[in-house]
Image (cartoon, rainbow, N blue to C red; front, top):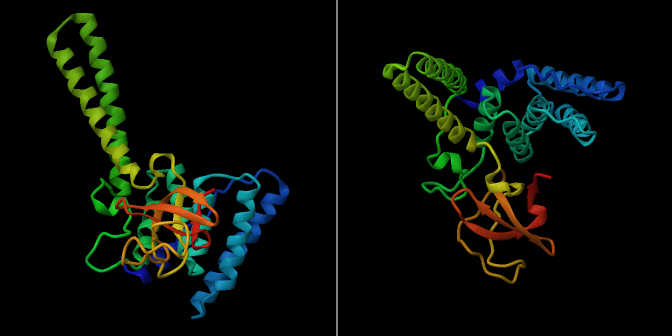
Length: 268
């Protein structure tokens, strides 16, 4: 999908329901939607609309601070950041939303397109997210289909197992075993697919916010770079440790190093 086509589809994606809980939150959601639509109108006229999208993002962020938490809010916030050319924040939001709704096809498309804007070193896997390095990643429609099939197979397995206990015929026992194993296999496949959008092993998600960042061997500029290759804004990692204004991070391929804390966004 080209960037222009994605922006067209993004403009058509509804932002709600965000589910505010009181009048002030409802007003914030309305202000965010108005600013977002104003930004889209400016884009249609050939302008950028960055300020309007930043305003929308600020309103959505305030809703998050007030305790509103759902995949729709994260998607809307990510869209606002993305259209404001803030890819690192957009990635952070899409990852959070995908953690809340790992099989949401719209969130996965948004995440894939945001990742496509990140500049990675040529001809190397350095800094690329783990999902790009061979983990199972299925299209959203296929995830939904497999989920339905898994439920149906499990139900069939239970029904044929019950039938076996009633009539004691081996074919029902065999059918039950095959159906339940099939459901288990599909469940495993779905779980592997969902791993590509979650936070690994409980470590906080990190997104690099600056271009040309070097991973160093220690927490200071006096330490030499661990790698000759730099990482750019939008590269995803996980936070291992923080100390004295520095963060130790691990990239998708297992590369570990220290970077200044202000160069990364950390999922709170």
